[in-house]
Image (tube, rainbow, N blue to C red):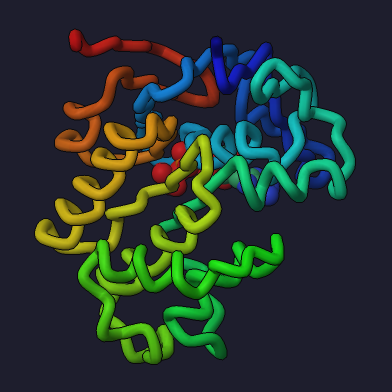
Length: 227
Ligand SMILES: Nc1ncnc2c1ncn2[C@@H]1O[C@H](COP(=O)(O)OP(=O)(O)OP(=O)(O)O)[C@@H](O)[C@H]1O
């Protein structure tokens, strides 16, 4: 079964009297557990596609299906549990809450769902990425690589089925990038998590099951790597 499907997605923006077509008739299907990379030059529409697939933005035309349910016109209230429980998000700029500690940032999405084990789960995740000693620190006290590891823990706390990541290793050195990539790949292996990553990194693309290349808002190639 495809966990995620896009059918004929188009996204346009109107600036003044000009209409800009940022995505043009994108269709794709992602089977459960697959690791998909979306690549393409700057401005080709990668981030826009990720925000449409994850229900953060709505297409001008076309539809998005999650587990065969059309989410395109779902209300914000109906989308909220999907965003909080089924999806995990990792962005280049972390989006950590500055006034919360590391442990609180990670446990927050689970506490929204009244998970009594939220703190415990958060502590276990932090341990897994080597940040067990940093639970009481605030984001401004962490390095970029550490912040990204915290952001990944937060994305994982509700055991999502799909992780959407936009340049998750974009600003990081190779050691931190490797650690983050290893973590994502091990989750896929252990829990069958589906990964949809936007990246410029050829090393990451090399490890994916499939690489989708965009140019000017269209898919120009779709390469599948052998098992
Ligand atoms: N809110 C907006 N209003 C108008 N145009 C937009 C808006 N958001 C994005 N665009 C345009 O859509 C195009 C695609 O943007 P997008 O961020 O999806 O590209 P990208 O491939 O992720 O680029 P990068 O690799 O630089 O992050 C760009 O030309 C951008 O200027």
